[in-house]
Length: 391
Image 1 (cartoon, rainbow, N blue to C red):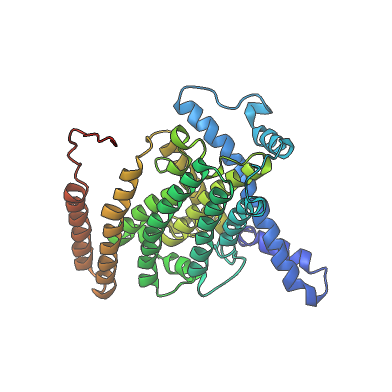
Image 2 (image 1 turned 90 degrees about the horizontal axis):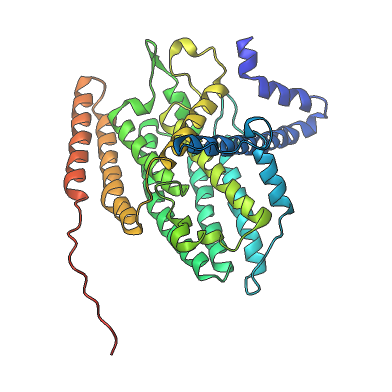
């Protein structure tokens, strides 16, 4: 019974495709998988918006959505109807084609990343030996979409927001890539399925997740920081700094186009969470050996939703950084520490089994973190500002 539940979606797909001629079954199976992805994740997005607004309301001592449906649960439906019926306004001087394509490129690129994520045992739409490389290639396309939106709007606030977003995304994407390289060094493969299988082992009741190693914990923390910046979430939400940029790169978007940007941001958050769970948290594997009877896809989505909760928690807790603080943090702390973590990963890989590598790698990670936190991010000494005026 539990094995059937674990493979229930694959059985449904094969059962539906079984009514068709053999020639059409592979194509129909892929199409059903695509339909599942574009149905499940937008549904999670809708639920997440209600959860976030209610959670932030509780943190800020207010109610949140409570008018549409029981407990406000139908608020996403009302927002969707509003977006579909709201007037679509395009600036007169905007590049209409690029302005139209930007949100589509963002959403399509994000959906493409889900195609290679193993969401359960045997549950991956496209099995690639270079799945991790494909994922990051698709993720980099979102930067093109952001620039398209800012440039095509012919609005100085949109353009400044786009340039700010690109600077931030490129800076932290380097960290995102290097933190994943540590996992590739240990696993010896770019296949996300093999990365999960390498962690789906147990010593007693405890799993061999990479986060439980010194290099894995450091890599996961750097990945989490970079992932938060990549998705423009607080405290790294400067591209949408309403106090100085109105709404950033999507200032000139309204109606359903703005809803697509909103959808793309949350889908990116789900995608980054899914990849983080795959690389460091064992993907669809259970946290304890005696819980392996629970369907694997439940564990994957539980880890993703836990990550979403942390994103929401940080948004309601942390203030927004300044642009200079954001960039200094990326280039003076996060990136150097991630590069050093690759050295620690190499030591872990070649020192062999035993307690010695635990001691050496743990001490190195802790010592370098303390030194960089103490000296690498020293506060600037502010002096009186002097003004000069043109004569």
